[in-house]
Length: 150
Image (cartoon, rainbow, N blue to C red; front, side, top):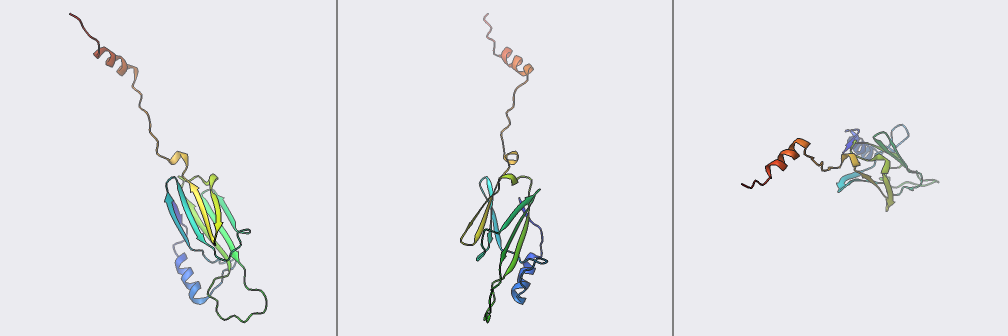
């Protein structure tokens, strides 16, 4: 199970879009994400267009997964005509449930999308428990199948 850590993130993102507030170290911008379960793993995708995947930080401490990235500002002397793409530091934290195996998280980056694959922990997978009869039941069952010749 995945849980968001801050219910007001969408409001913050909307405010940043309206007022053009770039992310800073003190108040990082958010990154849009999708998350779903596909069979025996959870998949999380983060939109990070224009971000170099090299310096992206991905950490798991206990059950908290943190993604941190940066899209640098424009360098040089430019006359800015439009600025709709957020720049600066992006950060996102997810609380991962105990049913996920945080030791085997896999990450890939393609076309501006960071994809995380988090397998379901073995201990959380459904399993069949075999019931073994007690010795008393075995002896009663064998006695009831005896053939008596008269």
